[in-house]
Image 1 (spheres, rainbow, N blue to C red):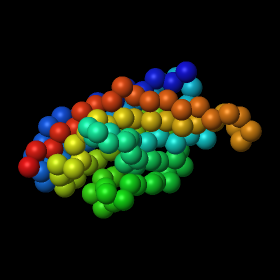
Image 2: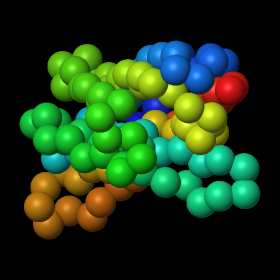
Image 3: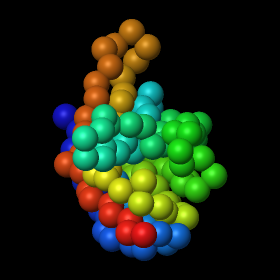
Length: 121
C-alpha cells in the first residue's frame, strides 16, 4: 500500500508561480513513475507531468515550457514547479504513482487526495 500526501496548492494571479509537492510513503519500487494530473470542473482528468525513478519526464502539451517536474527517489518525493500560470491551469491537482515490483508483476496505481490550484485573471 502506498499513501500520497500533496501540498502546495493555493490561489495565484495569472503569470504567477506555484510549487506542488508530493510525498509517498509505503513500499516504492524501482519501476515506478510519479506524476501529476489535474481535473477542471466539467472536464476529464488529464496528465500534467510524469517522471520515472530514473528521471525520464513527460509533459502534457498545455504545460510544456512552463512546468517542471522533479523527483527525489531517495526521499520518495516529487515536485511540480508551475510558472506562467493562466486561468486555464485552474483545477484540482492529483499526485499519482504507478509502479510494479518486477517486469512480470501486476501494475499498481495510487492517487493522492488532490490539492486545489486557482489562477485568477
